[in-house]
Length: 132
Image (cartoon, rainbow, N blue to C red):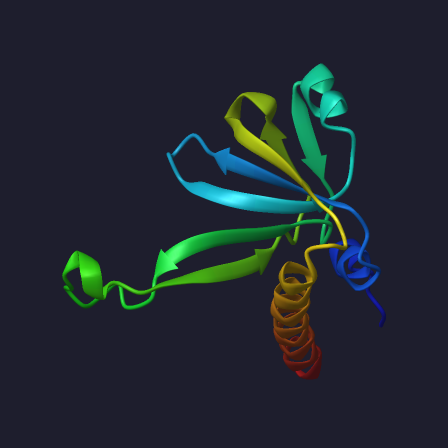
């Protein structure tokens, strides 16, 4: 069974990407990385529609959130996940839009590693479910 991961194809091809900073209704903040689309279309529609495996969600989290630390000792990590089902995001919740191009090699490399890890976990889980 082969699956298509449009966001992985875009990152592998070093296509132009759009990074949307979103604050959702619960006040949760994250960056949504999607293959490039004209931002004007998002605002003319009033929302952004994401199909399965078309976008990557990245958020900054505290590395050891369970440990009380002083501000200086805090370490943050980027946690990445893929949007696995059809999702809609309101244009009103988009705080910032950044266009990323192939010039940002380090960012593409970090996204590629994160996506490979996510895809291997998804496929391992699917194989385990198929065995049952």
